[in-house]
Structures are given as structure tokens and as C-alpha cells.
Image (cartoon, rainbow, N blue to C red; front, side, top):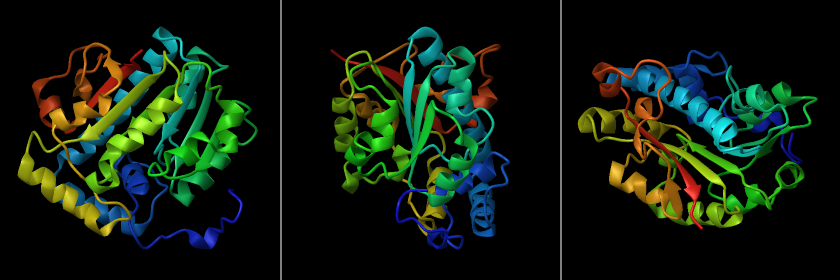
Length: 269
């Protein structure tokens, strides 16, 4: 654990987005408060579970692209969530066993589970830190021990920026992270939207008002602006099932239930 962290600091009463996401994906590392929040979420928007599953699959395809096609061998995954099958280091390791991964999340429960999962690994690390303090993530000793910032890095911000409000200046956070990375680095980003069913999506977002982080839903245009300084790779910013699908193209019904946009960008020179 991080110095100064105590298990008593874990809040099991207030729903946490990482544990809610775990519950949506059928995981068991969550509490009654998280499950109750997910029940309310699915009542407001049954599509939420399909969106979570589609987002997870997008992340895995994007990592395979980074490691398999773009040749990336080091990744920083911010807002990683509860470890589950098909984590970033597992997907990357299937292609390049030497690939290095730093996970960062602000939930102590995530930190505990990730530490247990990553024990004994010399190519992975977990940092207890908040996206709102990007310098702390980039400058953390664990990050510096694994990531060589003179070589290209894959930065993952998967389903996390919608927990950053406009007043917290997400563009500035992204700019700080972008400027810390060298040319040839990549950004993988996904973000929830209300573009498809605005009223239901806003009702679902309201469930997070009682969680540790609220949700700010953004339009495709607003999300595209987060790629400032990055050149989008094909097929650009799209609903996550449409980003380089493997196998059959997604059916219209799948797209109706995927309220998440995703894309991958290469750091502009």
C-alpha cells in the first residue's frame, strides 16, 4: 500500500464508480451500496450494462492495437478500476511479455486488489492517485521506475473523464499528460454520452450524484475536443463497438445500447 494509507480509510457506504463498474461487469469486488446504485442505474437506463461491456471490449481491442500494431511497450492506465479478467497488462502481455504497465486509481479498494494481483510482477505497478492531479501520477516513483518517458507511451483514459467536471478543467489535465509524453505516444480515450437517449442518460447520470464522483455526460463534439494535440487514427471517434470490431460488424441494436464514444490518437508532432 501507499505510505500513510490505512484500510480504515475505505468507504464502503458511499457507492464508488470503480466498484459500480465492477458490479455492472458481473464482478464480486463491490459492496451493497454499489450494487444498490447499479440497480437504480439499470432501472433508469437498462443500456448501462451493455455500454460497460462494450467499453471493456473497446479497451482490450485498443490495447491490442497499441502493442500489436503501433509497437507500444509501456502503458499508463488511469482510472483502471477493479482488476478483472482481461486487464491491460494481460492483454498487452499476450503480445509482448516485456510490456510495462502502470495502473493509477484513486480508490483504495482498487489499490488493494491490484496490489494482490500484481504481487511479484516486475513489469506492472499500481499508483494510488487521482486523475485531477496528473503531475502526481507522472512523477510518482513507481511510474518513473517502470516508464521511460524518452520513449513512446500508451496513455489510457477509458471511461474516466466523464467523472471530471467542467470546473475541474479536463482539457488542462489532458494537456499536462500530453505534454509529459514524447512524440509517438498514443491516447486511448472513451467517454459516456447522452447523444442517443438524452433523458434516460441524464437520469442514469443522476444516480452518480450520490456516489464519490458525479458524471458529466458530453456530446461527440465535446469529447472530440479532448483529442487536441493528438491525431486520431482510423476510424476516428466513434461509438465503441464501431472501433475496429473483431469479427462481425456490430448490429444496429448493439449501437443503440452503447452510450460511449471511443477513439485512439497519436501524439501530434
